[in-house]
Length: 367
Image 1 (cartoon, rainbow, N blue to C red):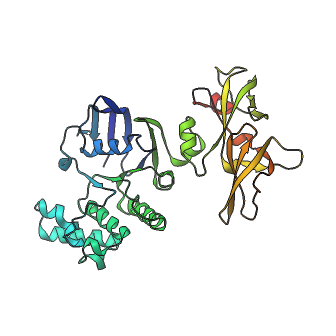
Image 2: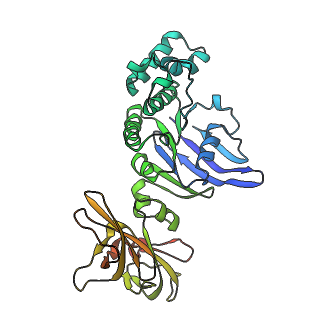
Image 3: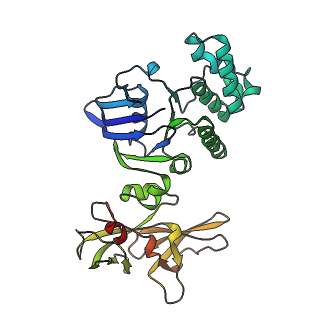
């Protein structure tokens, strides 16, 4: 078992609050990803869990045992750093066994654990090499292997793929996903890359300014963001936003008149909604379509097209200057300056109030 419980965790540096009262539960065998922009506190939160930073206030428990003030070596956690942190003068085999040797682990047990880690990570042919003879991906696998041999309750990863090139990031990401399933381990992973968050996680924790914005499965956060920040952060290309005002309210929804000129009927409502309220409509690229004759809801001007083979992303601007991206077939493209007619799928639109909080759909609100 490896259940982690964090309650009202706070951390300050020189009078500045960095972590602002975080509550979080990590369940046994979960792959939890902390994601957010630079400076959001995700790495600091991981270091607090690891014991590498002192907690200002709050508590951290592992399987019901208070570890807030326990030294890092006694927390039964293993951390993999962005910079690999390998000993350059030691072979791969010695790097893997070092922590066990230091702890006085019997030689036979050390050899067994090193062999098992080497098997899992396909490091067998590399055991006699030194780090300078390895590629970046191989070094990262050795760093992960050092964590595996310790058999920790929780693995901690601090942006482990940041130093790898694009192709190697994809390969190593797949290896980490496989490793999680093979080890049946609890893992906490920090990244600024929302693609890593979406593809690796059972649970995503979106952080911003030292606070948790939303916690949930990747698809839950993608399809049901709690606020403008989460909506704009998750997804590539990002969600487009259109400013507007509520022009009609009923028991089943509302009309929103956009600054861009169009009026859209939406199945959204809440008790505080009134005509004249400022709102923001969100729409993802896959839910914007080139309009058929007589079905135009929004006129836009084409800016740049990105042709990726299977898809083309057209970057456009509304008449009020707001940027949008739409996804179309890969054999199509727009011309710079061309006027396009768009249709918005209202069932997939997101609506946010003036404070940036989501306005739920009528059926969701009723439920």
